[in-house]
Amino acid sequence: MTSSERSGLTLSSRITGSLLACALGEAAAGTPDASVFGDATALTLYTVDGMTEALEWANDGVAADETACLWLAYLRWLGTQGEAPPSSAPAPPARWIDRQDVLHSRRQPDATTIRALRSGEMGSRQRPLEGDDDGPGALQRSAPFGLIANVPPAMVEKLTLDAAAITHGNPAAQIPAAVFAGLIHGIAHRERPLPDAVKDAAEHAATLGAADLSVQLAHSGAGSLSAASATAGNILCAAIRLVLDTATNDDAAHVSALLTAAAEQDAPAAPVIGAVAGALIGALYGRDALPAAAMDQLKGAAAVEELAGRFSAQMGA
Image (tube, rainbow, N blue to C red):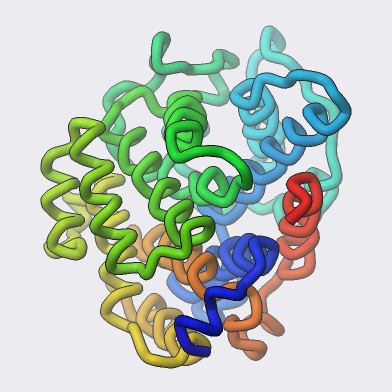
C-alpha cells in the first residue's frame, strides 16, 4: 500500500490496527512463540475500556469524569492480577473485558502500577503517587488517548497526563506518555507521515519542558538503551527507532519486519518497546496491514478486536 492509498484508512481500521499491533509487538518480543501479550497490552486494553465507559455515559447524556473512569478500569485490571486495593477504595462493577480469560494472567506487571493501585488512592498531578519512578508504566498504556476522535491535541495531552498521574507522579514518566499519545494522534487523525510526526513530537516534548527527550526525538530517537536507562523517554525513543529502522515501501512488509526486529531485541524492556512500536505502526497502517499468520497465533486476538470495535462504535468511527 502506498502513502496515497493509506490516506483513505478509516479511523476504525487505525484503532483496531494499533491495538492489535501493540499486542503483536509485545508478544513477539516477550514470548518464544510470539503468541501471548502481556502487561503493556492488557493495560492498554483497560485504558480503552475506561475511555469507552466514559464515552458511553456521554452518549447517554450523562457527564463522566474520564480520569475516574480510568482509575476504576485500572482497579478492575488489578483484580485480574490477583491483587486488591484496601476496602476504602471503590469496587467497580465488572464489565465485558473483565470476563475475558486471556486477561486473567499475571505476566510481570509494572511494580509501580501495582503499588499505586493497591494504595486505594487515585493519584493526580496535584496529589502525586510514586513520584520517584521514571519508568514506562504509564507510557505503555497511553496509545488509546491519541486514537480518541473529535478532540484537540491539548485535550489528548491533558487526558494522558491526568491518566498517567493515577499511578505515576513523576513528570519524567508522565511527559513521554503524553508525547506518545500526541504522536499517535498526529498519525491517526492528521495523517502525518511518521518522520514528520516525530518532529512534531520533539517540539511537543520541548513545550512540556522535557529538553533531553526533545533532543533525542529530533534525532529520530538516537541513542542506546541499556537496563540502567530503561526510562519512559528512552523506551519511547527506542520504539520509534525500531519503526523507522524497519521501514519499507510496503506497509505489510514493514509490519512483518518490525515484528521480526522486536523478537530479536536483547533488552529487559524489549516487550514494552515492542508494544509501543506496535501501537505506532498499527495506527500508521491500519488493521489490514497486519500479518495473518501472526494474528492466527496471537491468543486473545478476538477480544482485542472486539474492544477496538466497541471503542470505535462509541465514537461513530
